[in-house]
Length: 408
Image (cartoon, rainbow, N blue to C red):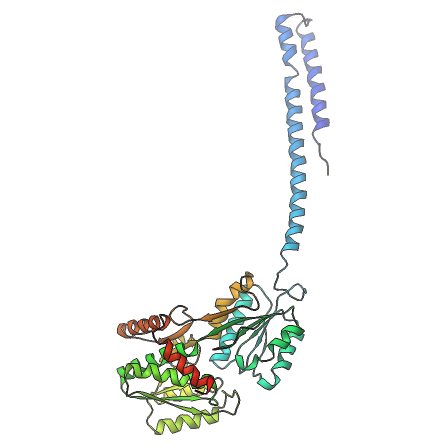
């Protein structure tokens, strides 16, 4: 690049100015340099080319500085390109891919779909590739299916439920570069190499029972059917805590639990759930808690057809749905957990090996909400959430967990 393009022109201007001054003296009748006036004129004549030279030199210096600045910017841009490599590109292929492992159908409209929908949103908001999703994973093949995710070039694996999380310690050792996250649910222990989000099921189900009690009190009735899977520990915890909240509204209220799936972890048995619903309907149930995955929405449809109070099992978005009607939402939405956790993962603030427990009364992601509450119901439910966080029912929750998981 030419650094001093004005200097030859400046020299030429100076020479021409001097010649013009000399010629002008001859035309005035031979005025000499000893003339005071002429001398003054002769002394000032070169000022114009001197100024031009000064300007040319300044411009040349500016050009040189501009060239240096451009070179510095190019160097900075190259450095930025190197720095801009995403730390979550754990396999170094220049892109970030999030893999999702779901234990049930990705489109169940309930617990399983919640994480899938959130993963799609999270990937889009961070300009990552479209997520790779494997759903309907059975616990017996969880290790293989999680390996299949890794084989598809994912950088992060989000495991959607504790029932398919048993292989994680071994997988972390085999694939240490992958970032492992698990929404492993109530009571799952802190695990090296895995960023965990969890919750307290007793807290959540207590306020769910209380909210259902408020609806029964308003509309009439006293019985709730909880239709679930296989009498698993966390289902026992759910039933007991739900009953506690229900009866804190009115001691005459009660809930009856019916398992409908094939052991273990079958929350998608539509035929079994439908049969249980019909039996409960014949028995005079007033509300139904379809604690299910793939079989959840079919029971919501039946509840709508029979004007039965019905609630979600995890999803926080049901109150906005228009295709089906829910009266309330029980909040343990895996998508909401991911939306809360992933900004910290992206920022490097949430590390593998950490655990965050969502608490009722502190975190809006957990608890219960009535879709169209009266002002009194809203205030009452807010009070109960706060009491749970303050530890008012801590001892009762401890007893429930002992029965559900400790054989007490």
